[in-house]
Every structure is written in C-alpha cells, then in structure tokens.
Image 1: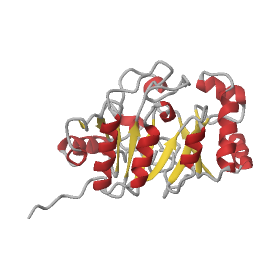
Image 2 (image 1 turned 90 degrees about the horizontal axis):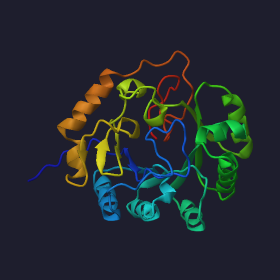
Image 3 (image 1 turned 90 degrees about the vertical axis):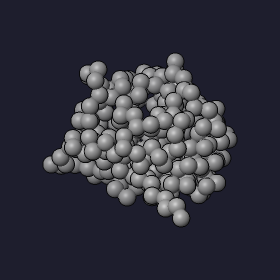
Image 4 (image 1 turned 180 degrees about the vertical axis):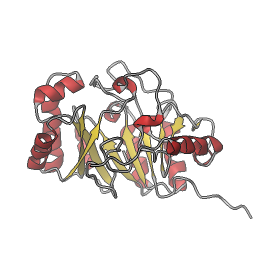
Amino acid sequence: MTITEPSALATGKIWLDVTRQCQLSCVHCYNSSGPDGGHGTMTVQDWLRTVDQAAQAGVGMVQLIGGEPLLYPHTKEIAEHALDRNMGVEVYSNLVHVTGPWWELLQRPGMSLATSYYSADPDRHNAMTGRPASHARTRANLVRALELGIEVRVAIITTDGAGVDQTRTELEGLGVTRIGVDRVRPYGRGADTSEPSCEGLCGACGDGRASIGPDGSVAPCVFSSWMRTGNVRDAALADILNGPRMAQARATITAGKNDPPPNPVPCEPDRWCSPGVPDSGCTPRT
C-alpha cells in the first residue's frame, strides 16, 4: 500500500502570479510589474494542471495576482477551473478596468475581490500608481463591486502612515467593511537595495501557503520569489511543497522572523488579510 504524505499546503492557499503586465507603474511594486511586462512562460494548460494539483493537495484558496491578473487572457478560465474544484478564488486587481464578463464571474459564489488603495487624496494615490486618473477609476469600480454585492477587501498601502485614517474613513463611507493596512515592502521597485532579504517578510511564508510565478517557479510567498524551491513545469506541486528546498526556505525565513511590533495595526487574522511586516500584526494571507 502506498502512503501519501499530506501536503504542507493542506487547507491552505496559493498565489497564482499570472503576469508581470499592468496598466500601472506603481513606484513600490514588489515584482516590478508595468505596461512592458510579459505573461511569462506558463501556458494556460500549465496553470490548469497546477490548480488540479493544488486541489488534490487540499488547498482551499487561490489568489490570482500579478501584475494585473485581468490583463492575462486566461485568468478567467483559471478562476472558473478553481471554482469547479470547490476552491475559493480571490482576484487581486487594481480595478482600473473591469469588463462585463469579469463582473459576472465575480458575482459567482466562491469568488471575491481585493484591491490596493493608496490614499483618499487622488493626487497622492495617482503619484503612487504613476498614472493620472487611476484613483477615479479604481474608486468607481470599487463602488460598482459593492453595488453588485461582490465580496470586497481593500488594503491601504502606505509609505509613511500619513492619511491612513482619512483613507479608512472614505472606504468605510463607500461601504467597505474589510480593510487592512500594510506598508510598502522592500522588494522590486519598493526596495532601497539590490539584494532582497528576509527582513521584509513576516516570517510565516511557506507555512500553509506558496506562490507560483509566471515562469512556473514556486516560492514561499509572492514577496519571497527569489527563494525558488522548484518549478511546476518540471515537477509535481506536492513534491515541491514537501521537498527539502521548501523546508530550507521556511527555516531560513522563520530564523529571520520579525518580532511583533509594540502597537500592531489590527487586521482580520482569520481572513485573507494583507500580509504584515513591521507595523502590521497579521499572518500573511495575500
């Protein structure tokens, strides 16, 4: 009789980081996505196979992220594939442009939506995204999502903590009930050094979660993509998750785990909250 070891991700979640293309050029983007970004080497069949393997491993939640996941031609197909396997699906979008078919899909049971919101001040928000009028577009589509009854969560991303209370007040006024706060992460364009380190991580990466990038590489989370532990194009997802490289990555991250801040920002610990490094008191889920 063959005994199958339980996956390190059983009942957990995976990020499917489907593209580096984005309409925006956010100054802090953790993976340096932008208008010139590409969709990587993963085919749609690669993504669907990965979803199948994740479901078989007991993964309960998929987050589609990028870049802007709505720009990848097959994201909708991937989302529907995950729903058909009884997995929850969250789409992390900048909400700059949402098509009719996407609005229909987002209203299906099991679907939810997340976005980043930088400020109640349009100029400050647009300065972060590098695109004029992005605040107006994101806000308008956020309002529409709420009107349609779509489950929505918003992460307020800040560089210095200024204006967070005002931004939260605006979002609450719109009807948003799930609001988290996070600081800019020191990765991609948000880094002030060329070499990434574990200091910007919360310390729980790879513990019940993992990320798959546009080239198929697997990492403990979207922020630790330099810690590649395998590739789903040439190995089974379960083998990678339970393999020695992932175990070593988790050990390295745990060893550098940040101490809890003295006054952590509250979050939703049992939901897919915005991940927290210094000044955020939550376990990473998105």
